[in-house]
Amino acid sequence: MRRSGTLLALLAAMTVGPLSAQTSQPQAPFLQAFLFGDALYSVQEGPAVDGFRLGQMVAHGNATLSERVIFFGELSITARNSGYSLAMERAIIRYEFGDRLKLSAGRYHTPVSYWNTEYHHGLWLQGSVARPEPIKFGSRYVPVHFVGAMAEGNLHQTPVYYAVGVGNGRGDNIAAAGDGGDVNGRRAFVASASLRPRNLFGFRVGGAVYADRISVGGVDFADELITSAHVVWRRGRIDAAAEFINVAHEPVAGGDSESSPAYYVHFGYRLSGSARDFMPYVRFEEMDISAGDVVFAGLVADYSAFIAGVRYDFDRLAALKAEYRSEEVGGGSRAAAFYAQASFAIPVAGGS
Amino acid sequence: MKTRTRTSTRGRLLALTLMGLAFAMAPAPAPAVAQDIAVAIVVHPQTQIDNLSFDELKRIFRGDRQFWDDGRRVTLLVRAPVAEERQLILDRIYEMDEDQFREFWIGKMFRAEVAAGPKLVYSADMARDLVTVIPGAITFVPVSEVSADTRVVRIDGMLPGDPGYPLRGGT
Image 1 (cartoon, chains in turn purple, cyan):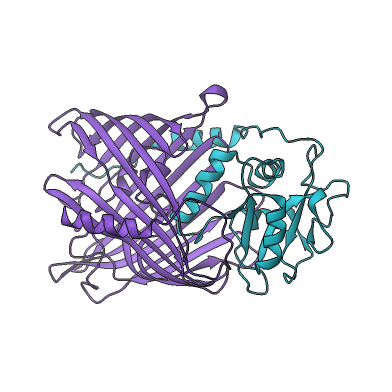
Image 2 (tube, rainbow over the protein chains, first blue to last red):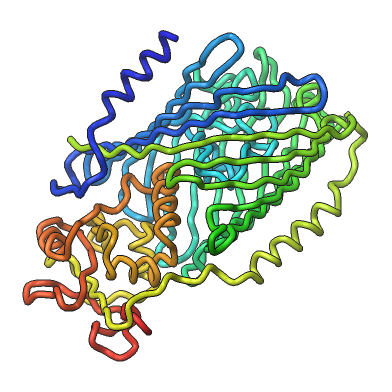
């Protein structure tokens, strides 16, 4: 709870006033902040505990320090059985030369997946209750967070957007980033690109490559190569995304590379007329973990799910979501679950 | 852990079907805009731009282009609700309603694509005044509010009074 008090004090310091026109020169330092949060109720078949749960409370801030220097930060408080945990999810300091080149350093959501960089810790922004399983927060399947440096931008007079980065890679716990430094002295590299045609607003196709060496407890396990591809159509009433990810591990000690593919297909459609506050959605997900994968063995299980839900935007910045899941984990029997989530966003604008 | 198998073909077929369905569906109909309104795009007097393609104008107003060719940062000034010229811009440039517009900018800021959303201005006078004092600023005003010292930008080579100008109600 002391950590929660620290976060609340930080949030209070960031709160300045209501949204209003900026009359000062844009080069003057100013801050815009958001608060996101959600509460969840779940009922699940099997041994999982049902009931209410507080989701993540997230504080996000964008600080413009000058015309070209910008800071992005994201803090979260997550409810656990043992209490509340405070985490710095993203912290990025960026210098913008222009649209073609922006250099930054810090902690990111790894640009190895479309969903991972499109949606962050504020669940109000995404259509469904939770993220696809391969890229859920805490996932061991892909490195969700990345600590390092990035170069990104939009290639001149083209619809191509790119990001390339170098960083610490996975930590000793492969679900975590190397926040305390690189655990094996070998940097991870990531590169992503997407095509966003200017005359086809809302359409996007792209992919990413990520390479790293995984070590645990000082022992090198495997060289990791992650590739992904996505196609997205988000325009008007339609919110559609499909992504394929493959994680390949080649044992350092020798042996064949093992691949574990995963995919998801998400489709949401906002209704019209008097029902326009409702957006039903469906999603199919699958993870197929190789039995011979030296990294994932015993840690990551096969997974498949059919998800159907509806989002109800009952207020400008608040939404209710109801979701049914039929999931199969590790080749076991299929189990059903129901989730209800209330999520919100609070924009806060500030000035120097 | 089960023996390795191929990823389900059912999922792949479903993916193709859903994406095809998404592309086949028509976008949401735009809200009605008054027939007789025309909007001029105006920039700071020192911004070296006389003409923008309509696609490029959209990129600027959607935050996909954030710098002018001279390196100055683009500052977007957008009329606050409720104004006819704002509705025209939401319809023609953003292709969004108010809720989608709000979510669009919150999402861009949350993804760290932009540092801040557009600045709100509460009248055409305010828009006109601010665009002349904020370097790199761009905004829109009704044609009737354009003054002699306002730097108007052609869109696809056209001025607001030209036939086929894209930011006119009813076109």
